[in-house]
Image (cartoon, rainbow, N blue to C red):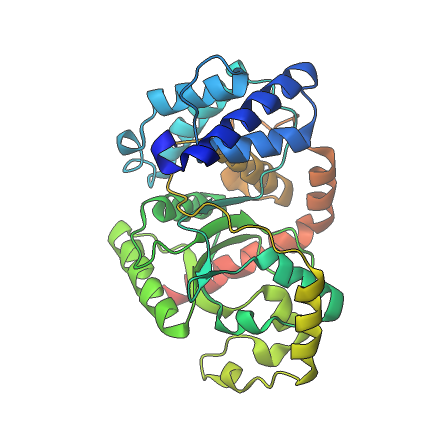
Length: 342
């Protein structure tokens, strides 16, 4: 999160963006789109210049007060994680007037590439949503899929991901599930470009779980996006290798070719997502996960918060409420499955 992480041209642009966003939010603090953009920048970059605005100075204080090497070894203990979270959130509440914003996913590792090419997953997902066509590049997308049993386990997996050493510093994310057709409330993924690489990363992660004596997570492998397997079950990863026999319709190549010819491809984002410490975006992500746990009846939220929050995004709350009974049942089913394997 320093100037050395980016080219001088990119630094100049980021500095300008931060200055403009800070000015906008000073005048109109409830512009959530601007909040999201500013938090995304400060998640990976901090300008040298001081005094740009409340968000930037809050981020500077967090990095100064909590260098990563002073807390990352401690937070696998949920009680320690709770203590740190409460202190982080108190600083953000004091320094920034942040409107209710839901941050569902948190990321680490380098940007996801397959054979050295940026995947632009959002565009490939758009192709699927519009045409029911799975991009050819998605055939090589495999992921370590981690299903934490509750919020406490999700936080433990997240902090393992923060320190995880993988062959390509693989892109990874932790999240809460809001897609109604996709099961299990808590998720974490390590993105890979082959089955072989996925098995290597899975082995590394499972060894860390054993060393840390963390057993309240289920680990497996998935193929492409969850939606693909719902529409085309034969594409879904299978331990017996049946997914390798998935027959891609011949006409899909023509449909995909036309899609790419009509779709502007943005410049590949800056590679290297290494973080040097806790960010405001992280803290709002944790807050969102806690809100979600509270909403679905996962009592482990009480470890991180003394009382229910009254400052939640309305649309997010409504969405979670609609799914709460289903998510609670899915959570309990996974917990029972994990207990049966002990």
